[in-house]
Length: 377
Ligand SMILES: *[C@@H]1O[C@H](CO)[C@@H](O)[C@H](O)[C@H]1NC(C)=O
Ligand SMILES: *[C@@H]1O[C@H](CO)[C@@H](O)[C@H](O)[C@H]1NC(C)=O
Ligand SMILES: *[C@@H]1O[C@H](CO)[C@@H](O)[C@H](O)[C@H]1NC(C)=O
Ligand SMILES: *[C@@H]1O[C@H](CO)[C@@H](O)[C@H](O)[C@H]1NC(C)=O
Ligand SMILES: *[C@@H]1O[C@H](CO)[C@@H](O)[C@H](O)[C@H]1NC(C)=O
Image (cartoon, rainbow, N blue to C red; front, side, top):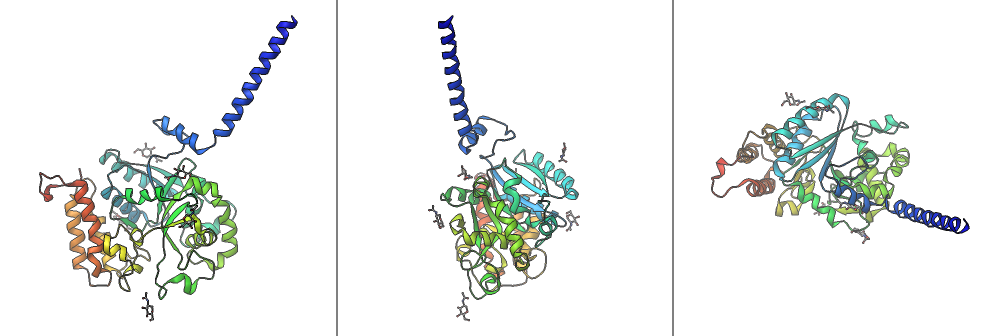
């Protein structure tokens, strides 16, 4: 009996030791990114609690009147990108149905080249009104995204008044250029001290000499979560709310003022605004290599102050996915640019056309056919 008893005790000790050991290993690794990444790779369908790492994710926030504009943004992504793209759209209840309808149609039309999820607008209850109305309605939502979509590792965030003119893959590629302290990539607001807003007017700290423009923002959400991003934003908003006319962009600038090592600065050709051309050519890289992403800030796509911006928007707006040929898109961009009243930005027509021409020729040209026959499918 004693012998049996001691061997039973012995087995119990071994088993308990094993359990403690197993618990130790699993608790140590189950929350690390590498195990989650490994897990999600094993699964063909992403499950709750796994992180999407193998997809290009594009996200934007829309409330009120920006619906058409944001669909043109989606269209521009689909036009110039061959790789499937996953869209995460934060929107209010009014627009949810319309997004679902249009994007579901496009998904069928383009044979699953896109997928999407619709998220509700969601601000912390404390100070909800402050947040909701900072700068423009809902715009500050972006600051909370790292906490709102824990299943996404990284995404490109864009304002709805942006249009891709080349493949999104190229922009996504910058994630792999991040060094170990970088959590985000953006362009600077501009680098002309004579016109630059931040050094002349800002009453709050901002990034570098000229500040960052937040219209295009690569966000490694995993890193932003580890950084504790969302914990920073409310105290900053409360402290500076009377001094931050650009809302969320200013908050981002304040955070990165104190964490310059966390930002990768992108070329101005990935967030090309009228500021880069209205006083003359202020983005040499776009003149040399073409504009890759156009940002119609201050309503440049809609008012008549920047005819070149409006011309490109109009061409993409009129283009019907799955119906029109990409050749006709190039023709109308060219035509509208030529017809537009002359302007400093319009003088840089080649910078606007270079990337679309190159991209569409590479994506869709079939050597045995003439270009006029080439169409999107
Ligand atoms: C949005 O687009 C639809 C269809 O093209 C059009 O009927 C509508 O007037 C547009 N709305 C705005 C606000 O431009
Ligand atoms: C979106 O539309 C599809 C059908 O096209 C429907 O099955 C789905 O429930 C809708 N989703 C939402 C969130 O409305
Ligand atoms: C984001 O950062 C995490 C943690 O460093 C890393 O595992 C992941 O690969 C990064 N994502 C991208 C798209 O680079
Ligand atoms: C800024 O203004 C000064 C003085 O007018 C001028 O000499 C300089 O060239 C301007 N710089 C830029 C980048 O436009
Ligand atoms: C990453 O790059 C940034 C910007 O160039 C720099 O400030 C930072 O020190 C770099 N971090 C590391 C860990 O090398």
